[in-house]
Image 1 (cartoon, rainbow, N blue to C red):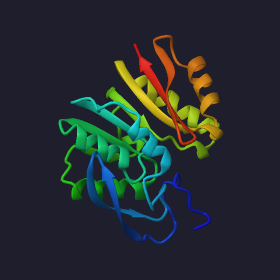
Image 2 (image 1 turned 120 degrees about the vertical axis):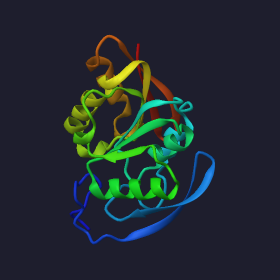
Image 3 (image 1 turned 180 degrees about the horizontal axis):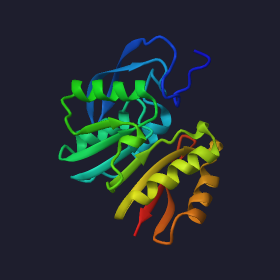
Length: 202
């Protein structure tokens, strides 16, 4: 397991499914996680903070969970916004399989779990929600955000949760200095050592 990272495309450890009981969008549900993905034992604190400090999902359109893991953000969006299409994007194939399994168990037909390369280039998003993989390193993180944030529709928001001691304030400054003039970045919430950053496209 030492060589396994949740941002590996194909975890090498033997697959071990595990049931998990969580509350999503006010519903108590049983889902499936596994080793080789991010936070398989529970919904991690950062994701809890994000889910607790973001507005209701848009009622329709294309929604993106960037770095979806086993799917708590994507599944919450899909439950809340059944007429939308939720793109659950990750490089980890095991995580994507878990999202598909969990969406199926919840009867959600509006979740597309796929790798970044499988999202059509012409899609723009009504919202982006992300607990981004900070530990991939600054360059990779910046590349990821530069790739996806410009795909917000005009008037739409991205919401990112980042641990304060893992560089949330420096990321805020970087976003301010890097994104085009039609974007603004603000701190929407602070909770349990995390910041929620709101990136708005005007």
